[in-house]
Length: 156
Length: 156
DNA sequence: AATAAAATCATACTTTAGTATGAAGGGTTT
DNA sequence: AAACCCTTCATACTAAAGTATGATTTTATT
Image (cartoon, rainbow over all chains, first blue to last red; front, side):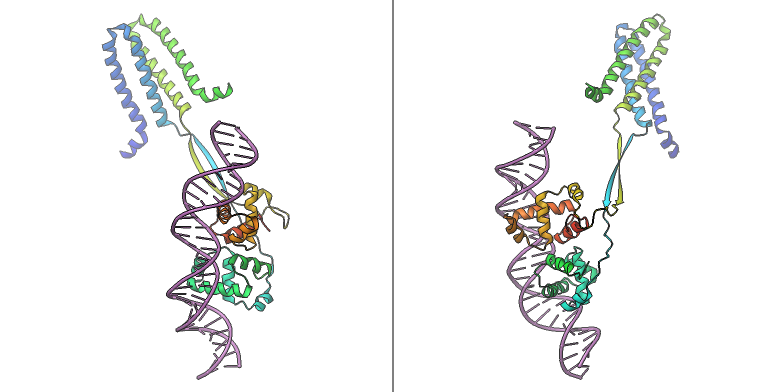
């Protein structure tokens, strides 16, 4: 029953509305037929009523026009790394494996908190590693560390 | 004139249709008023006509429903000459010349204070430029900005 | 076993980075 | 003229980065 209602809602409503309107018209006809100069008003009322009915009907039955707006979002892939890493330079500078891990994540733009989470370490630990890296690389900031590490090909 | 037509097409057409219908109704009225038992048919005709008018109107006036579909695409490594700067990417991102200056100095590992001194600007100005860069590059930190700018070949 | 280096964490502190908001002038376009 | 973007600067604030120092635990080496 509910399904039937949903499927034929528009039709049923239209039928009901039509019946009601016809009844209304009959009543108006009886009342206004006596005063034939009200004819124009009568016609006008009918026009408006049925225009509205038509609009309503159209809304119920018409599939909505759809403008499909396609927004293209560009994703930028990391270019293939074909640069070779200077292992000897890493050794010469005395940079440990853990420090290299941190250095690489740092160069990817991660914050200390993110690096700590990534390596399951505490933030102070990351800070220590980074401080040691700064000392070994002879820099003062992480941006400098990244720049120098790339220049020395410690990272790609 | 053409613009006026396009903007008010529905209204003009509706007006014209209404005028035509009123004329038709008047004509029908004259013809059928003599035979008052044709009244029902007359009313029926009016009903149908205006229902159709309403449907047509609704079609004209209904706002199209807009579906926004976001399509994610991978930007193929743009065949940009090696080591050259992707000017079109800079343009597409809407990055200004001043912002590029700041971006380059930032990528060299300079602090805001150093960049400000280098460009004879105040630190707040540098911060503004950098904040705008972050927005345009869709990043949160300068290290990310540098990484992305290099990947997109905005800088070398 | 003792030593050394590496790795971990902590606390406290200073400095720098980043956010939010607004204002003002110059230049260009509509 | 109005609207817009770029540029500049400012204040006030929060968040993150960086420094300094010290302690504990692994791990490898002597």
